[in-house]
Length: 276
Image 1 (cartoon, rainbow, N blue to C red):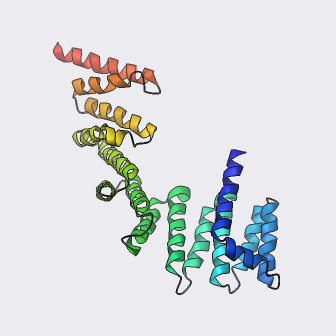
Image 2 (cartoon, rainbow, N blue to C red):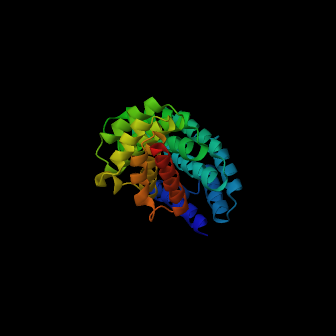
Image 3 (tube, helix red, strand yellow):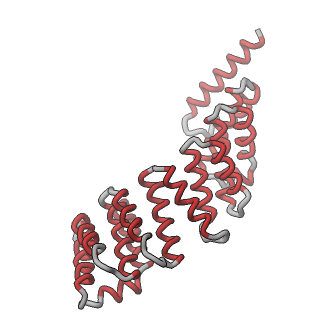
């Protein structure tokens, strides 16, 4: 029920975004295209999303004004993403939209942003996501949502295991003004070193995460993970005293206390063995 409500809310935002245009189009009954748009809306109301998508695809075969095409493409993409689980079809609609000559910058940005999100969130093609977020960043230095684009570009590189590019991109995020993104960039820089098994550098960056100015702005799961991975990095680096001191505070706060008990026991036994 909640998922259905979320989907309806997302479609409602499309209607809000395109509200005036949509009203003018749907109150003009003289056009065959507008009649098809009305029929598509009826199918959406009846939850026949496949038929609505088919009608929108037919509409896109006609010469359309920018207003009509933008309305159809954005609604069609949401049908494919939210109801039909066909994200590649959504990208095809936007590819067609981006071929419009002299496309206004505002629509170009919305289109590129949607394409980037589809590749990042739905298709998980992080190479393509990186390409689109790079294009968005290059449009204008003061572009709105730049911090989000830079953050997702960084994550895309991290998913691709291009750690050097990821860290360079995360550094730019940390130089920005968005405190929440700065904390996340700090955390994921630590992750990049952890995945490379560079324990000293992982310790350096996860230690930074423990500072209150960053720890308090991290999502709770990321904050907890940074503390655990700091302790684990100490352990992997052979610093058993640092590992024990870092695991101990997690004993009563970590979701699975048995994990912490086992790590503490293991570290303690290794410390004892060293002294023999």
